[in-house]
Amino acid sequence: MASHTPNLECRMYEAKYPEVDMAVMIQVNNIADMGAYVSLLEYNNIEGMILFSELSRRRIRSVSSLIKVGRIEPVMVLRVDKEKGYIDLSKRRVSEEDIQACEERYNKSKLVHSIMRHVAETLQIDLEELYINIGWPLYRKYGHAFEAFKLIVADPDSVLDFLTREVKEIGPDGQEVTKVIPALTEEVKDALIKNIRRRMTPQPLKIRADIEMKCFQFDGVLHIKEAMRKAEAAGNTECPVKIKLVAPPLYVLTTQTLDKVRQIV
Image (cartoon, rainbow, N blue to C red; front, side):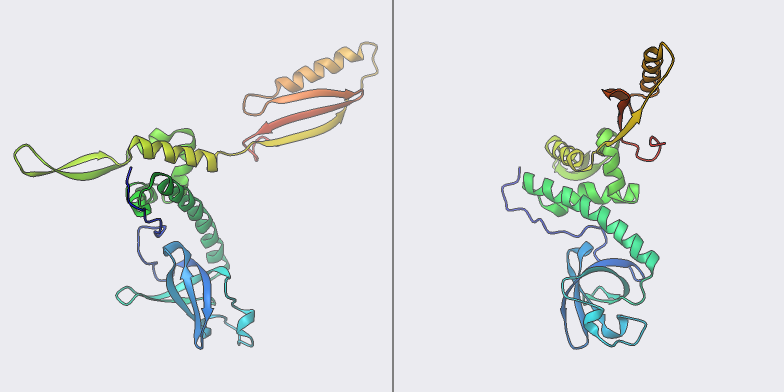
């Protein structure tokens, strides 16, 4: 375990800067004479600027009604000067579809980032080192590390065992050689799996129905018991069905499931 104080600041994605015409999540820091200065939350809070002319397609009557310090929202990237570090942004050019996609991506990225940061802090490792060895390779392979993390909940080895990194060593002949080794130590792997399962294991949806059952035949009790047995038999390990008597003719039917769409029919 490293003894130095870890650097827990790092962007969420491998690219240091966003692409032009990409929607990004920002937080407004302050409002100046010509525009608003903001932090790009997905890019380690690097600074960007929204000119007042890029706030709205309509005539601006009140700047404060369009943008407020502290607000978090998606905007569109207009220009990126990587040498000078200037990023120009637009609020008026971002569409509803862009906003929805950006919010969905950001919420996934924020969860991934929180898990990664907690592992880095716990094990005293630089956060960027974890992203280099784990996070960004998973983004490349799965489109988003969130999708890989979902798979890790049930089958971590299938996702994590392919991750490798190169290290340079001096061989017996004194020459430098490159070796390919697993990207994760067992300590890092265990901590990552533990945190992912704690944060991402789906919680079962519990369902209850209050019902009445009556049968006016002379052996009606037997028919009701048979109906209860068949109802419970209709369940399975993924969606078990239980029926309990409250007081005749009232019964409670309960079940729980991880599949909120397919099983509730």
